[in-house]
Length: 504
Image 1: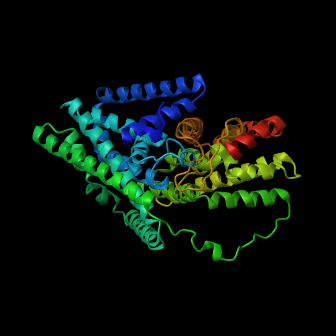
Image 2: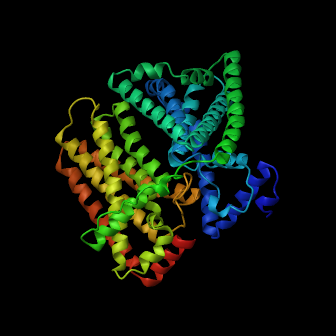
Image 3: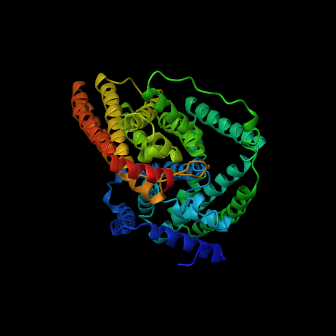
């Protein structure tokens, strides 16, 4: 494989980076799993595209009515996801490419290529494929597929370009203030729109109505016009995004330029070693730009979406599982990366080794439970009607059970499959993109199952039944967590983990 330094064009550099990432998958099982997953996603998309004739007329009419909202939801996700990751995911961590002159266009194309490595993105893609099948029952499915594909590509490219614009603006203090003001204004506008009951009117004026009409259009002229507009916007977004990426990466920043002149604020000492380790872990989460931004988005977006959609109380039982899985991906799947190179220093301290793992468990648990609580409280503000005792008990039980499952799964993955992550830059991730994609599936599937089971139990009207179901789930998660802590206590396993986290 040629090195990126010898590659001149962005396409050749991208091919070299992809080849390097493929070679880093040293186990045959990982490569087979990646190829199997890609084939499974293609098969699911094909099933969604052929599901149009399986619905009865009333259900089909409801699905077609919800199509603009589905397309708009994908658009919001495609814009928000690269914003939270500072321009998109990296194929190879940037600290490993310092000696290679990788072009900005290569960075931009790499972020576009890795955009589908997101469980929510894939679920939204399957929803759009199903909507395309429903909208084209009386017209041409290939034409609708082409329009939907161009819409997905166009929105993804524009989202990446906007993310790089924000990255470039945030290099200066004035730009950071501008970005903060714009974000706060959009958040206030969204809250006012939701609280005033104008959500339906805002959705009715969404440009996704034109896209939906083009997907199901029998008129060839309308379809050609809309498809050409999407193609032109995608090309324009690609050119602008490539330029914005180079502008953002080459722009000198002033963040921290005067920080060394400020007095150092020392934290007060804690009463115990465990509390001191917990305080260090909390500070580690907040000092990482990627985790700080992701945590703020996690605290705002789920609750805002739930409130805007006016989720019924019965469906609120499913919400804790979805939010808990997302919170676990923030840093939980590689919790020991919070220590960075300091892992060697922490391992040398004369304290019980399991205290370090217990501190990580506590910080992860409060992060997941806090996100679940904020989303549940915000979503309940506009839920229609009054909840029953069984529904309230089910929401609480689902929140506690899903939190326990996510914490147990994350700590197990952190000990068994650690990764080296500096978390110093805005695009640093706690794990490689593929590992995060697999981790999202491992977290989302059990939490979704727990939510569905508890929601089914709450439908019986017996308030004690969701609690009875949640108790063994929490106990099983506790047993799994205890096994993980014992495993971390093994000196050989702990030495391997510390060496990987500290130096790769």
